[in-house]
Length: 461
Ligand code: GAL
Image (tube, rainbow, N blue to C red):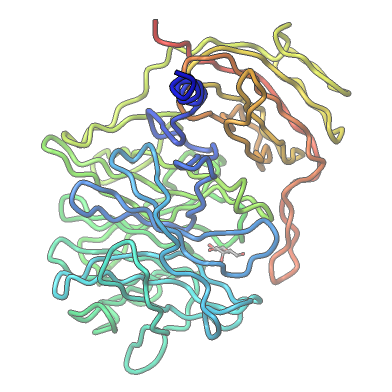
């Protein structure tokens, strides 16, 4: 009897970690272990009924390469950490104190092998080339092979992407718009099929719809977000026609930088999912998030006309839809929220730049979300969600900085078990800021954290 009681008690408090019911952009995601998903500059490969996400693993202390992570998901909502598919090497071009970015995996149709491409570089970004690694199993471990060769020479470029055409041909894309066609084994380049289109055009990504190729890229502003733009062509060899921005001007691509487009093909439609990074230097491990949005097509144009906090995808039909919400809204000036320290209050937000100033809300519900007026003078907040016994369910460092001010969802918990919870948010006294190799300064000018509203999804009755 005694043993049974203990088991039941531990079940009562156990959480199903990393369970989500939609794709939420701009909020840290938690995996099955309660850790924040770290997979930036990513791509996704579908193998049977599973999606595999590959991306940069990061630390909060340096930009040195630590490895590329692999996560898996059946629904694109909840991500399970699988492995570090390519860890930092003992020495060499992806060894200690080097840069490794933008991993992209493709399955080679001829050999059935999985090939991972990446940007390898020195810490000062002066020794760049496109590298590759191979594995027989999708999850890795991948074996780093060094530079991908074209006419026997490395491709000495930095931002890169990949594209697999409908005929199975594989391509490597590099900044500026160059396109390289891979040989049948995907391990070297057969031909350069397109020359540079423009300067800048970083983080290149491509999709093909109804015979038309869409080539998306960003301006060159380090980890700061900018208005990404695109070209179209009926051939990978061009001519490429400039089509303008992919999101409303000034939204800085809804505060993100593109990295990949995933076609989700169903029986009725194909949804093309834009995958972008919301970088957060120096806390790229804890606070950089993901902006994944369905692309909207109108004739030969594409766009992300509206930012969706949450959306769902019917994988069988390939149809994307907005997520209905029944959330209860609690405004920043509601008595249920307890503030500590110095806060400036208006009807639309409460904000504080005092280190350790905090607010707490006790609630009962399935999910809690925090909305802030993100701005250019905001910094990092520590968010801690506990159960009623004080046990930590999840914690995260949330970035409230944005070059343009907008009401944004910055945190959303995974789906919670029925129970009573407490959410506390503290000012860390830190902010994102950095400089690029030309010594241009980027990032926030202040340490404010902000709350506009809290949304709680009630328990199902
Ligand atoms: C960006 C690039 C990132 C990273 C960063 C470093 O422009 O897209 O992948 O290299 O610069 O500043």
